[in-house]
Image 1 (spheres, helix red, strand yellow):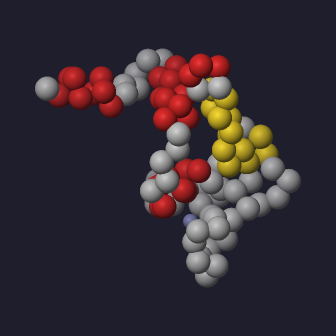
Image 2 (cartoon, rainbow, N blue to C red):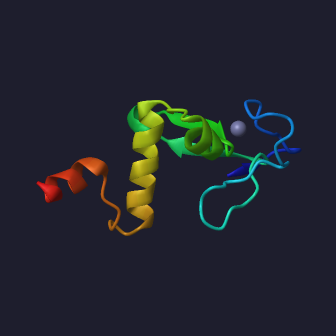
Length: 95
Ligand SMILES: [Zn+2]
């Protein structure tokens, strides 16, 4: 994660919304808009996004590129020691 030189707010929310934008409604919300994240994706690509992407996905239903999502799943899998299952594997266990 790379910190930015200032705070950015969500350009899609009304200006009357609280500043800074936070990770609400997630549990233990934290401020967003002061950093960039980088996610190694498939095929050697690295995706860069503002940390506000969490807000964009949760509140504004933004769908990041498939490679970004796949890279996040891979990172989560490695950081959890293999305990995080992707939706496909979880679905296979349900059937
Ligand atoms: Zn917003």
